[in-house]
Image 1 (cartoon, rainbow, N blue to C red):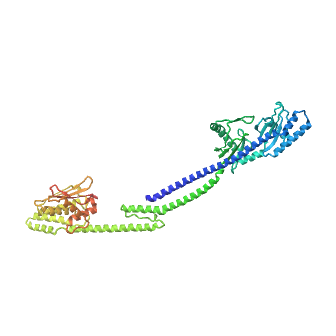
Image 2: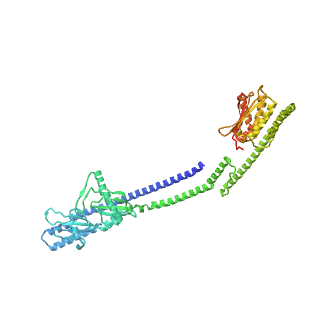
Image 3: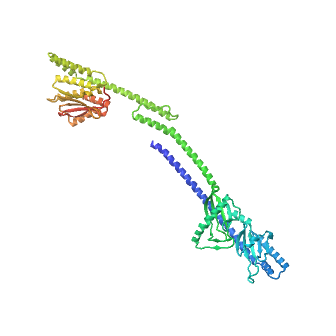
Length: 588
């Protein structure tokens, strides 16, 4: 049964192992996908940041080229000399055409503006009405700044001959569509998004609620903690100040990390801020990105559950159709082993499978065993009766003839004749009764009658020590007479002056009844007792031996158990002591 139960233990271990493997596989797949997405996002971020930095460098170089162009020098000299309206208009138009040509030849530059702060003159590639005057007021030499969501680069035209002249500023506004394109290019992963911020975290484009939360997280992650780490690693600090941009310890490389906000978990990749303060941030929701893994996991999980369901169904069928039947059969066999031969498998327990034949055969087998046991018991009873009858018939005819001869001898003594006749009548009345049970009182009365006859015929002295309280104890008959007859024939007759017979019956503390028959004969040695015990234990009686002791021993063992068999020892006179102990069934 233990081996059968181990199948369930193995299945449970297999189930937990499979579930653990499935969980490990899911975690590994999720981690691998996250790492893969992070690598792709970082690679895309590196590429996009390079594009943005390149464009910033182009704008700065373009500004340097325009400020050193001959057209700007000529226009500036015209403004410094005596005022000539026609010449100014001509030079201004030429400068405007030059700026337009530069704008057309450069992608990502939306507007070129020349602004003289003292005189308020403005030359723009677009309509002057569209120029934001407040943005012009923010212009400084070599400064990137943000105004109304537009990114500007300002550069001052500096001359050496007159430091008090009205030196113009060149402002180049980055094309918003180009910045939008750069932002979208950074988001190289589907279902992801990107943000473009300027110095301090202000986004250039509209951000939704989730993006606002992400920006807040980026500020918390980047500036207090990451800047300190960068300062420790690099040991240097950079500062750039201006009206709209001023940073300390600016991030020098991109960072990637995972954050949790109210909208869910996201993976973020933040690029190092560009030289002009622009910073790209890409993000993607893990829930959306992990959908393929979850889909595969769901399918795999369903297949696993299906297999587990099939396995459980198999185990249930195995339990119901095999294990349960074996358990029922084992239980019934244990009942039979304990001696319950009425054990039967009922019709309710009878299965509708191959075990029904086994169970039916078991019922037939038990029924047959019960019949055989009943037959054996009947045969045993008949044998016991036959042995008892044989024991009754064994009574020595010489005992009767000698007793009758004694009566003839004492015919002139009516009193002796009467006593002998009474003792013989009691003796033969008991030993010829055909009954299976007697009492201690009846057995004692029969023993006393036998000993009285022997005492009248021979020089025999006897004592029967028994309490009348034991007279009602039931036992099988003819147990003491064969032992006393054996003592008379083999003790008193074989030894000169031997004449004592002592019968004692008493109750032990264990409630068992102990019987003893002692004589003052020659007794037996240990070897002789051992040989006698072996002969008595043999189920087949040796014909050379008498039937008396063997019959008594066999009947005691068969009825009361092996512990009730005859025991032999030395009596108080040095003769033989024969004893046995029985546990009585009831008293009358």
